[in-house]
Image (cartoon, rainbow over all chains, first blue to last red; front, side):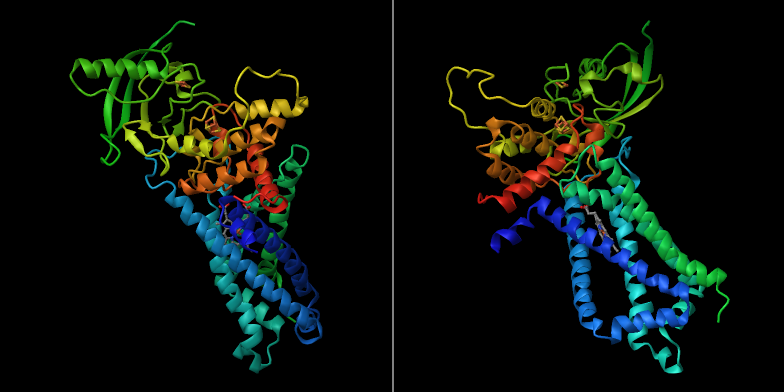
Length: 224
Length: 256
Ligand code: HEM
Ligand code: SF4
Ligand code: FES
């Protein structure tokens, strides 16, 4: 076991942890987006979906997945912060002239900033939904999970905040997806162009997909 | 093409010693031929400084033909200047315009402390090489070159990696001051050849551990290194370094 844990003290090991947790989080987001599409099928469909996840025997599997998810996020965030701090320390004196080479992407150079916005989003998002679904006092008034979602997205401040956050999710994954493959050592001239394309496509589908809910409920939802 | 004359303003980083506080000083380079190289331009400025009894700008150079890797400096924010695929000594003044202001500062990284002005201490690279960047062979007369067959693709990839001159521009260019491109080139050139196989597993672990220990940053797969490398070492080498590292850690019994 010692050899295994020690691997993650090497710089490449730290990046390996980043890549595995990052790809796992992307997988989660794909499933999460799929589940959320029940919102488009109305109150009963969505409430029923939430009910099946939380109140049937599926709940045991869901709890396990939730724990893995929390660990995945925690490791990714912890490792990301540790890498960022070390990377800053590696250049104590900054350049006076900041020029950018003609090749590298803006998203790759600013991962920590997209990350911090996603982190703030995560906290607010959990407060908005996870907490409200479970412990929210609004439930006593008879509001269902679906109503909580609708109400949140009809507030301009949340609508705008969600949209902005999704832009940064796109930016994070624009670099993150293909970066994870490079970290895993998977760079090959036959496949890498496809991986880069796939990553940007997935980043766009995820960001646009999640953004579609606040847009729909704010601008197009007539209520029922 | 006839040469023209340029008048330039130089803002040069002057720093008396490793612990001294540095600052930019302004110098004027007058009547510089577009045929001059960047280092010749600095030599002209230095001659004037010496004539005036001032201390010349200290910078490093040796071969002046792009093969030794000593002439590192950051010109207008770019290691080895604005062009791609060349060292500072291969940069010519025809790429600048009359009246340009040129900022010149040293490579900046914790692992490359400034010795004086534009000269940095790159012995950290030597320490990484000492940690594992070698093969064990019998001394004596050179063995027959083709006695061990090497497939052509590997021979070419190894040659490409071996083109690294250890100049440190990758570290200078990387926002994280990571040495991964350098280390990946050195690990790759051996991993691809049969001669490198006996120490394959230990080499990669030792070199990565030494790189970490010396205070270089981690790789974020940004690719600024590849863009600024005068020898155009590709980051596919970094992917190979990662594979070599996982192979050694997870599939072999060799522990660093
Ligand atoms: C749903 C959320 C997230 C997903 C799907 C995600 C995904 C990824 C992926 C795939 C990578 C590339 C890994 C690699 O280069 O090998 C990455 C890098 C990174 N992530 Fe995230 N991430 C998320 C949230 C966060 C959060 C909340 C933080 C921290 C506050 C964070 C911090 C970072 C940092 C700093 C990097 C760059 C690491 C480096 O290359 O040096 N991420 N992320
Ligand atoms: S990889 Fe390129 S930039 Fe880095 S030390 Fe070698 S030649 Fe210089
Ligand atoms: S002086 Fe040798 S590479 Fe420039």
